[in-house]
Structure formats: structure tokens, C-alpha cells
Length: 284
Image 1 (cartoon, rainbow, N blue to C red):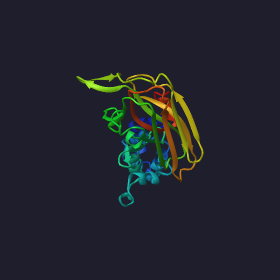
Image 2 (tube, helix red, strand yellow; image 1 turned 90 degrees about the vertical axis):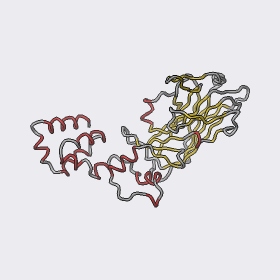
Image 3 (cartoon, rainbow, N blue to C red; image 1 turned 180 degrees about the horizontal axis):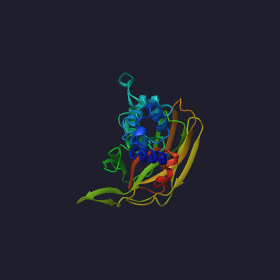
């Protein structure tokens, strides 16, 4: 699609620009339907016809998830839902990082795939021992999309659980735990990693699991590695076939071998991405 946009831009900037300017907006809009969102926005700068066509509702409706109205209801309460938004504005709003449930969850529309991503703050997760400061602390972090991470100093029984009921559009999704061994701190404008509490993760692998209300289940395990690096650990995939009803999902990470303690771990968030994005991530 990018090549189509390139050809049109060249013609509009050359001797054919007058001809393109005389095209009806409805005809231009039919062409723009087949372009990617970034190309549509670039084409809007060519002339008045392209500018008007680029705002047509039927152009942007093709870029929205089929259940975009349900997604908008997640962002807004019923009495605050803006009923007069055009489809272009709805698309732009869904592409932002939209917080809900008290700011402990966020979702956004991925521009490159048209899929939905969903992130969970550590404060939205059920973490064994989280209220005991001998084991866990919530610490500020510039590296977190939620501004804080959960830091584990030491514990025998490590268990993190989460669940959600969300109107995912149809597609295949992957669940990741974003973790870092060690605690990042800054000094003189540079970032360093305190590794003093890291221990126990090389003795037994961490266990990841997810399940859905329609019977899907995935299990995986791996050792945690790479002190000082945020790594996406792949818990598993699930498939959404019906976008007209919410999907119920449960996920967990455990290391409950009580023959040894483990510690020195930052839990940044749990993130659900469209599975086509897996190759972009630093994952295990």
C-alpha cells in the first residue's frame, strides 16, 4: 500500500497535480481506504480534495476493530461517552494509551497491525506477600509505563496472578511478563543496576500459565536471565474468535520450590500483544 501512496504523492507534486485536485472527494476516499493510516495522513496534505477525503468516516471505519464501540465504552462511562466523534477521532483516541479501572490497566490500538494491546500494572496483580515490606516494595521507575514497579528483595514462595475480562477483537494474542533482574538506579545522569539481591532464579525455572473461560490453556517455563535488562517472558497464546462478548483470561507466574529463597526481581507489568508482534520483543 505504501507504493500506491508514493505514486500518488509524486503525481500530485508534478504536472498531474491539477488533475488530481479535480477528482471528487468520494473517488479519492475510495482510494484512501486501501492505504495504511500513516499514508492517509500524509496524503491529506496534497490538496483540498485529499484533505477532505482523508476525514471520511468510511475510510477510517476500515481501520477500526469491529467492536470499537465496546472498546470506547471501556474508556468512557455511559454518561460521558462522546456520541458525536467522527471515526478518525475515534481511531486517534484508541491509539493513545487509555487507562481504566483506576489507572491500573491500559490498552491501545497498535497502528501497524490494527490489533489491541493491554497492559497491567503490578498494583493490579495479586502478588503473594506484596503487603509485607520485608519481601516486596513498590518503587518509582522511569522505565515503567505505570511509573512504578514491584521489587522483590527475598521470598520463599513466589507467586503472581492476574485476570481480566475484556472485549478483545478477534485474533491471536500473546501474554508476556515484563521482568528485570536487579534494581535500576540513577547517578550523575546515568543508569546503573543494583544486583545485590539477585539470587535463586538459577536453581529452578519460573513457571508461567494462562487459561481462558472457553477452555484454552498454555503452560511454559524458563530460567530468568540478563541482570539489568527488561525482558518479555512469553507465558503463552490464546485465540479470540468472537469479539461480540468479553474474553475472560487468567494468567500466573510462579516459582514455589521452597528449598531455597529467591529475590532481586522487578515486576514491571504484564502485557498482552497481538501475536504478530512477538518477533519485535526481547523474549524468552
